[in-house]
Image (cartoon, rainbow, N blue to C red; front, side):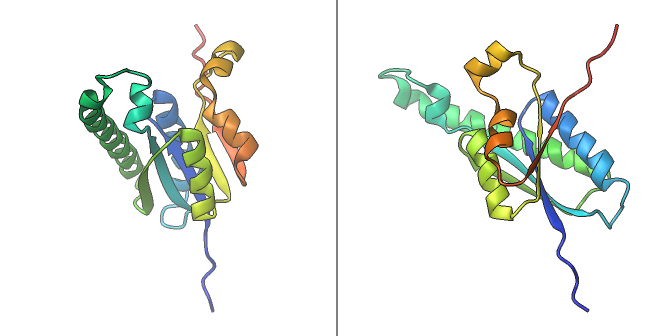
Length: 161
């Protein structure tokens, strides 16, 4: 009898508490209750901005700064992936693929869905208002409209005083 291939779940993470909350929530609801028999194959993706994007239009001195920016972006990516790995280990989830992909987070997440043939994409929500979201752009909004799979946006509950 052939074994059935598990569906793939891609979880996008960055260095925000919102994305780590989304990862924890996902593990608690889809992986921890099923030790060793989770219904999904887990792929965690971090989009590392390119150094030129991070610098922007810095002018003539930008070339001198580029190696330092690249080193910082690599450190941040390492920290993000390390923390994601720790969160997974704390929930006894060991069968996980961790990826760092350079590029704009919106495109990276949608491309990861295609690459892994994911049936669901999970992203956190920063909870920006309409104006801030319009100015900064929203990864979750973009993915909800462009990813070719179900997109789950996990919002951290507001603390009531």
